[in-house]
Image (cartoon, rainbow, N blue to C red; front, side, top):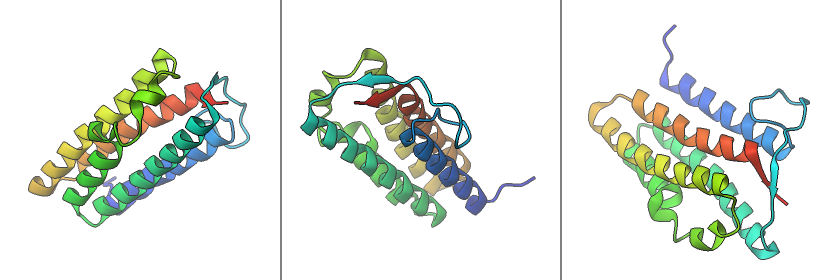
Length: 159
């Protein structure tokens, strides 16, 4: 079966939305709605920092949505720009990562850093897709980036 770009992007977005819905409802990523709640490790942040962090995570979801729309429109440079500036390593200062990191357990910190690295890798791969016209590697890189998000949300929760 040949997977077309719109089908692949639709599947990616459905998976991201399902994972986000499950995680915010207290379910393990990948479990069907109504499944058993996951045993996620609670992490304490100061109230203001918790609110800022949750807003940043919502912006991450919005950035992924924008990236997916850019890929669907074959706007590879725009997808790369959103990934790098909003999710990539160059976004760490904008998000106050140094301040937030001190409250994270080591595993959470590693997963978060891995997501930022994966976003920067995606940005490069998306630009290459603009030159080659092959969106497959960009979709794989986007999936790897989202995998970091899903893994972290499945393991940790802010309390």
